[in-house]
Image (cartoon, rainbow, N blue to C red; front, side, top):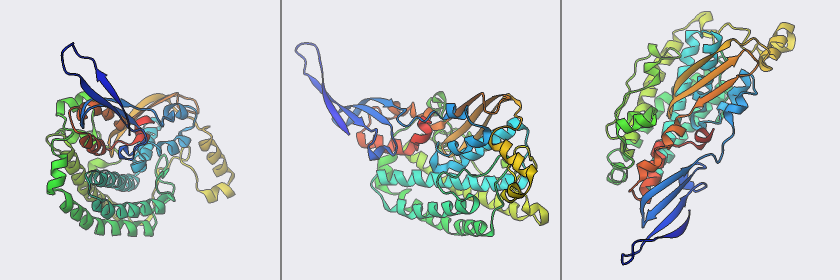
Length: 409
């Protein structure tokens, strides 16, 4: 943090009032990302704030206009890197909508498993960091070891951990191994006990309640006017969830509850994300049971039958001319892409994660716009922290779950 002192010139005879300009960010560890807030302080109270974005802007949308559909998947990883598989799946579902690809039910259920694991991974980071920023470090350590187990599941599925590039248009690169399912079963067995212990540490903790109740509160009307979605909107009492209102990947086959809060403050955001982790566990169990119900040849299905868009197996590429040709055409963007425009969204860990894709029939998108929830609700941050203490501003930032990679894109 850096600061300067400003003197406000008042009418003659009045007492001069002094304020301090405080630079919170862009590299302060409390921001958990590279973005800046210029605060005007009266002592420790914030009387005005101005946010700055763009420090790690990577021109995601313009990069996408120079890449074939398949080469765009890896750069979606770098958006919300705490739950990158949801970014990947959202992009694949968008492409499938444009291309008219229908995925098999087993593929949908496998996608649900991965996306809900990613949601848990994202929420456990957010809530445990809120604990750290209020002075409690133990909860972070309890939960973080289970993020590692989630990463091991990713690794079994696709070979990657943080930036996964997981899945393909039409399904997955390969079938899930028995080891992946064994690790999933271990997670489903062990994580609920740890999550319950985490809740016991915080939910009725007097210090935590005092630090979060009433901090960063927002009404449902204000949240909607800003364009809030996801846990930050649901904490204000609005039960909007893309998985329910516009189902994708067969979420309509899954039974779950949308958690909502009342006040939209940091405490309600914490409770909503905690409950969403319980709901995600419930969703994964249902999807896993449906996957296990497939037998025989159906249990080996992990992608749609669309050879024009789905990469052939590597062993075939090395031995068969037709597979080699398809591999080259798909990777280099030489397959025929329909003319049209689509918007498709998924329920990301931070809210509605949308892709607006315009195709003119060329080898790359004519235009691609990414609806990133972080960028939208960060606009409200100055309002949320106005008249609060500096320490509250840090907790408020954590509870919003601001991810700089998604914010700047």
